[in-house]
Image (cartoon, rainbow, N blue to C red):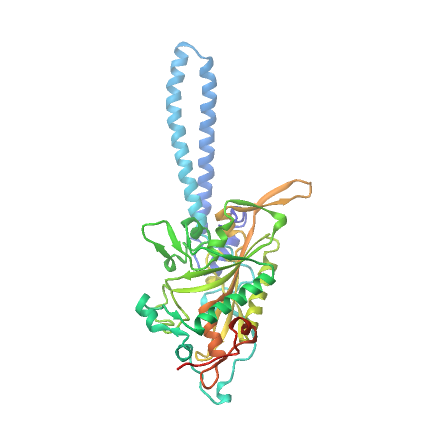
Length: 428
C-alpha cells in the first residue's frame, strides 16, 4: 500500500496518479475520510480509557455513598470503553481496506493511458526478411510438430484448452533456456531459488494480485491456497514480517517456478499455440533494495533482461508501459517485446517493475539502517521484479526467428552448450 504520509500530505499527487491510470479519485477521498474517522476513533477510545483509569484511582480513595455512585459510573464507563474500542477496530479495518484500493503512485515519467498507450523506447536488431530469403516462415505450431517439440493435441486431451506437452527437443529447449537464465543470474550475483507455486492468501494479497488481477488467479477450493501466476508472489513474501539488515541490500534472487493464469478476459486471443497458456515455467528476478536505489536497480534489471534476449539473438523492442497497464503494485514497468515473424509484430517476452515500498508495506518487510548520529532507523524496503525468461514465449520466439527453409532451427550460440547441438532437425 502507499505511504500514508503521501496520502495525507499530497492527496492531489495521488489523485493525479489515479487520473493517469484512468481511475476515479473517489478511492482517494474514501481513504482520506477513513483516515480521519480512524484517528477520531483512536482519540475517543484513548480518552475513555484515560477517564476509566482516573476513575479507578478515585474509587480506591472513596467511601460510602460516594463509592457506590462511582461504581455505578464505572459500569457505564466500561461499556463506553468497550464500544469505543470496537469502533476503533472497525475504523482501522476500513482504513486498511481504503488504502488497499489505491494503486501505487505512478512515476512522473510513466506514460498516461491504457494498454495501447505505451511508448517505444528502443528497438534492437532487425526482424528477418523471409521474403528476401525466398521462403515463407512457418509458425511455432507447425515447427513444433515437425521437430517433435510441442504436442498441443495431447495437451488439450489431458488438460484442456491452452495446455500442451513439450517433448523431445522441446523439453530440452526449455531446460536449456532455464539453465542459460540461471547461469546468467548466478554470474550477476543472484541467489538461485526454486520457489513454491502454492501460496497463502497473505502472499497473494500482499503483492496486489487479489486486487485488479484477482480474476486471473487460480484458488484451491477448500484450502487457503492460491496458485501463483509468477514467482514474484512467493519471493515478495519470502522476507515478510522480517527486519532486514540494511547493509546487506540489495538482496537479489532468481526464482524458478511453474506459473498458472486463468487468462481471464483473453477470450479469442492467441487461442492456438503456446503464446497465451494457463501454465508455463519461468525464471523471475526479484530484488529487495533501498528506496533510494530502486530506480537504478530497475534499470539494472532491464539490462539483464536485454542481455538475455541478446543471447537468444532476437529482434526486440523495449517499451515504457502506460500507467493504466502497470498493475496495482508498480510505479513504472518496462516490457521487452520480441518480433514474432508469423504474426508480424512484437510480443511481450519479459517485464520488469519497480514496486517501491508498496508490497513491503503490505507484507511488513523492513530494513534496519544506520543513521548519521550513530543510531539506527527501521523503515520499509523497496521491491522490484523482472522476468529473465518466460519459457513458452521464449520458445516461440527462438523457433520462429531462427527457422530454416527445411523446418530445421538454428540454435543460438549461447544455447548450444546447454542443448549439445547447433541445429534442431525435423523428425517429420
